[in-house]
Length: 104
Image 1: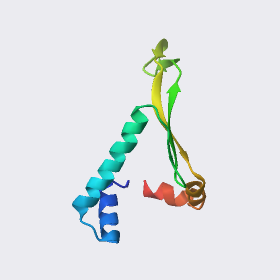
Image 2: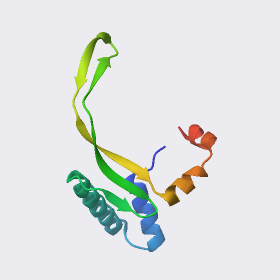
Image 3: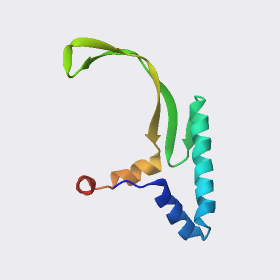
């Protein structure tokens, strides 16, 4: 099961003693700022967490699995790429793969 924004709001509100409404507003404003920066093509670096950057995927030829004889041109597009930072990579390295598979 995945974690939702509301789950973060509840956890943070309980830890710091603020109302959930106030924390929800702060979380939403933070996400809005991140989205606005990325939407303008800027990279966002969050130390010890990671980097969000905009990359351009080249146009390429693909195939329709239902009709593999026909080639389809897939247009170039922008995409957000995330690279984990050093501290996050270290935490991820400690995860057990079996634990992750059983959570699905």
